[in-house]
Image 1 (tube, rainbow, N blue to C red):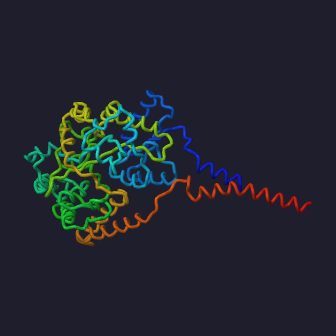
Image 2 (image 1 turned 90 degrees about the vertical axis):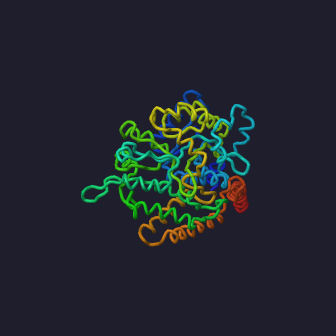
Image 3 (image 1 turned 90 degrees about the horizontal axis):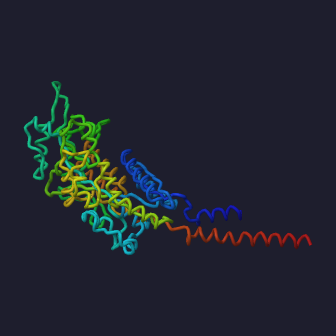
Length: 455
């Protein structure tokens, strides 16, 4: 018992003795390979005390995986986070305040980044995240198909009524009446559509779901009407339909998507066949943007080394490597406003400046989720809300009311969940420590008692 208790105490109380500085990210195989190249370059050129090692996961399970690692006290040292996840990690005490690093490191300047990206890393007057890359969501369109129909290309004046008219003209059927080309698909921006119609998913404090509004219901109804009423796209219940494949194969004329799709579309389609335009607008002009940042784990035992690696990731050297791969847009102003991005080698005929221009009036995509929710929770609840409407089980407003009640129940439960406490200073710490003291004394006393009986 003494030996086992000693081993448990040592294991739980010991610092991280790993030989690596662990960096965590998510993404497609191409994006993961891009980060691996960054890591290999850093290890080779900087020769750090602890070599950086990559840890990655599927995007759908990324946040949950990090929370499990946090509960086990084994979080990565440097963490790639989406801005929408940051409040959750700060609320749980899992993200390190970077302000002290800024104060003593005169070589680092937050003013070098696009100003629209910086505020998302600040919470409660402290900075926890540094911008690394971003993307706005835009409207990709097939220029050849627009030309064939005599349609003007989309621009910033487009409303959803104009989009719908164009989608009608671009949708084609065969002799049997089967649709062989859809006009446009926008399911990916449903949450932004809610903002455009004047609704919201969560309140301003991000601690209550308020999605059951007439404005949000109008947005949901328009999205479902595109497939069920107007027949210009398919509904989300359709099986084995890949939006990107349909667009790249010429069977879809317009699609909303982010920068991560641009290079692949360009490689898959005839030269000069596609371009991008701002999202059409509803009652308000609202774009959609993702803002990815680098953070340091509060559990890291190598925070100074983590800071050096973080600085490399957001340096001009590191950002140029990000830009070269073409899947993401760097956060540094010096690169994003240069020909390195504006005339990017993977999208030389595309109006790349549209991605930047959309940033000024964009809201977080897919939604702000606050300190009590994960993306999986909101995503699954919104999917269920749309399915209820598509299956005729509820009207748009009824379905959103069910979603609102479900999400608020989850928030109420999470409010009551106590935050994990560190081992040192916990009840288990004192129990283990007490057993280390009591066990030898008990063994000694027992031996003395047996010795006395023997005499």
